[in-house]
Image (cartoon, rainbow, N blue to C red; front, side, top):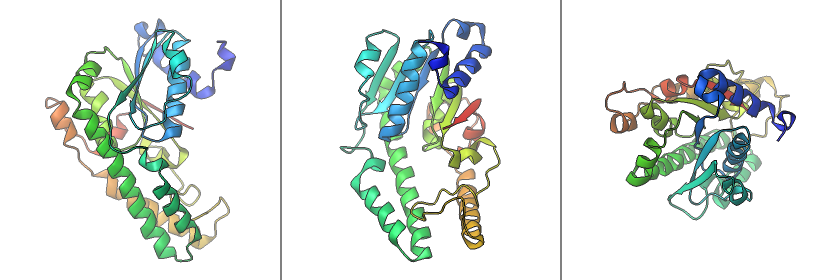
Length: 262
């Protein structure tokens, strides 16, 4: 694989890791933990597989009900890429379910602003709860968690899905971690987000040409949601790393060494 065939995102992550220590110049051992969404599992698996072509050893830790990317078998044959499943509930990722599609469609067609806002808030809670449930299933897998701790990983690539649980894993291992996320979540990485221009509200159908009322709505909603999650504490660090300071969800996100939006 030529350097020109590697996307900008991949270049940035590789350069970052090369600069972190002399060992990483010759190849790092990197753990990838995508959120339980088919497209996200595909994206991070592709990134992990491509990084093996640059001399790194990578492992993707994915929920069992996520669709396995078509290239996984071929990538594993190279020896430096591993795709490991951990059991979770459900036959498919919650976010990819028909239920979520129906809720988003109903919100998009609704003429009630209150229904859109309350429905979005309820759906986001369900999504977070589902991600946390998946994470708990992973932490309860004693054998797999021990393999992860003994795996000699030097770096982790995460997503901001239930960070108070998932981010506790690399934090407890005392390894650096990076985040990959959509631009609508850049506020979690201390990058100023103009909520009136980048809305995270499902079903509103707002574009970058919002009215003043629409911009004000997204600004208020996003900031209330951000304040609600900033002080969320985690018991998972206490369980995984009793010798380390207990951090909130927001503090765990602030520990990221690097982030790249996609």
